[in-house]
Length: 226
Image 1: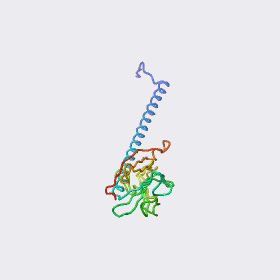
Image 2: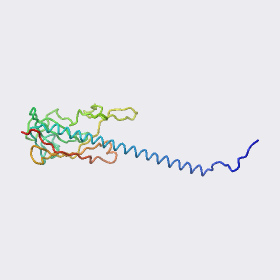
Image 3: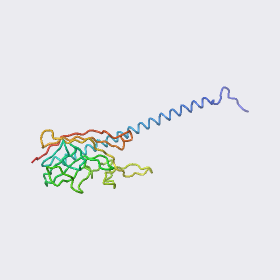
Image 4: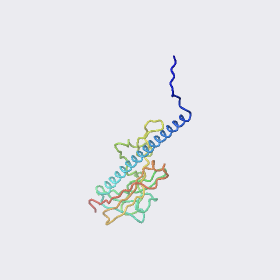
């Protein structure tokens, strides 16, 4: 015998539409929250990476300059490097251990982000171009434990492991840019103020440009000046 269920009815079309709308709004909100969280994590990772690289640059600058015998800084014009190097963005120094002369400078080569480079010079004390075949990025050969996997095969760039479109990890060049470098002698020829900015332009350029970065600065003094 059939039993009647009094007072029970199915959902109306309006109720179904309202429930669907609420579900859609919740799904959109959750998706937006996930995207925002992921973006914040990406920005945080990029900032940590830039901070790490800026610290490496400071350490390498000190490693190169502190043991030098003498320095030459030109705030009004370049003292070394390619002809396009701006005033105050090159530093010439002579190593005490072997008397070789070197140049550290900021430059942007064709197709490459602006970066700090180092090269050898023929002599100390005058404006000089780099000796042929000696120019390299200041951090060439460095690797960080978590991000770098070694040298990228393209133009000797540093490489970082990133997911390719296929989902497989691939070694990609790091778009790290050094900007607004300034070398200056604050007190004497035996020390140099070094200022520069570092940015990961792979992340920043998607937001409209790479015009500024994290700022770094230090004063480096020669250990045993001539």
